[in-house]
Length: 638
Image (cartoon, rainbow, N blue to C red; front, side):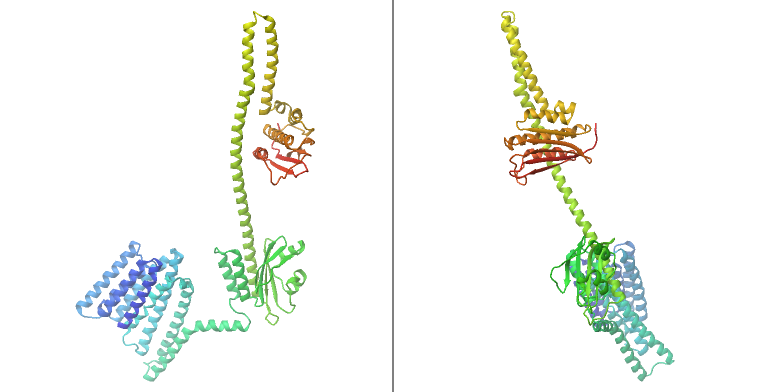
């Protein structure tokens, strides 16, 4: 038992070292505890029951080393109590544990640990589930090894002392724990579990065959028979161990004879589907796809073409080819997009670009979504290579379907990102527009206050002073009083005109009472340039719509008066057209570079129209005049 215990202790220490970097010190502590019980059992064989108890508690703690639930802690405590009591009895009586008793105890503990692992495995995260799967693989191998050891003892009375060998077989368990902690091999847990079940099943089959042979002899094998049976059994077990690796080598050799190396078509299909579910950049995903296609289907080369609207670009190719573009007509795009897969004859008609050698097998699978052609998968084989099979075509069609779905999703994602960016920009523009509107409103109030204070208020003060003078001199000098009253009449008219001008700047009465036509024609009195107005509106529109058009036109007219030049003329047009209310203010003056220049007036007009869903357009060039156009959706009349 010394050698067996040393092997198990070394394995457990390796598992502990492997567990610590993964951040599971609890599992490392269980490894140290099991190692300590093995040391004790090596010195005092009576401690063997405690080893079984330690293994049971460790199994209950998998995969993270934490015995979390009360029932798990209770079972672990009962196991240690029973093991300690059994070991104490053996020490006091001076006996050693029987092999059959230890096997029964180990099987019972293994069954309990297996149930605990099965309960935890479905709920465990992926990383911990891999640990459980590796431990299960190791347990299967250990169980098969113990079965072989017991069978050889029964058949050939070898080994004489079974217990050390049975304990040695348990070294695979800590090795399984270690494998579950190493990132390099942890991802192979599912494959390892399947392969371990296959190997264990084959080994048990060999043992069962030899047991049947011994039973068929109807007597205990003699020495010569025993040697022959043992040698043949060892040969059978060796064949089992070498069967799977040898099979893989032979299958690979057979594929190489057919000109196929690397992945199988099914593996290429599965691997692409797995990579699509991860956060792999799409360009890298396509490059991996063509490499897989080259290895699995097209030994002479593979290509992926991507595009839309009948214009496809060579995105990835192995071996690498120069950049190329394929332009399809509308009919070709519809036919190719609805085709599942195309061979040389079909390609000669619809895609002759891909027929480089009429003797070489080639396949083109369109990557489409709902009949919309989004790309092409192209695979080629050398002229002396074997032709494509129906299974190859099926795999290529499925790959093209997945690529089409991925391209469609990528297009939707790009459109979503563009929409989000547009919304972000519009939100920023809206916030800036609101700030400008508030600032303009405050400035307008201050301007009204200044005009009242400096204009109309001064007239009223003058009127008040003159009225006081009239009252003082009316009795003494009626002639002078009459002259002052005449001046007062003139001052009242001037004051009325000042108030009318101020009110016209706030909201013109003509616009409110008579509409855009009369309001815009009245502006001619304040314009020094030749001015023509053409308003063709069948009905009146909402006040905010008419006000927005009026003040935008007024702003444009004032700008033309300032910058167009003395020889220019102005033309204003307003009309309703296809659900839009359109206006334009055009001059034939000096013009300016609309891409460079733009003052506050354009910003104010843009904000005013944008507040009611309208848009502003500025067309101008140096020496070619200026045209300001705007349009507002017609939302209602009054």
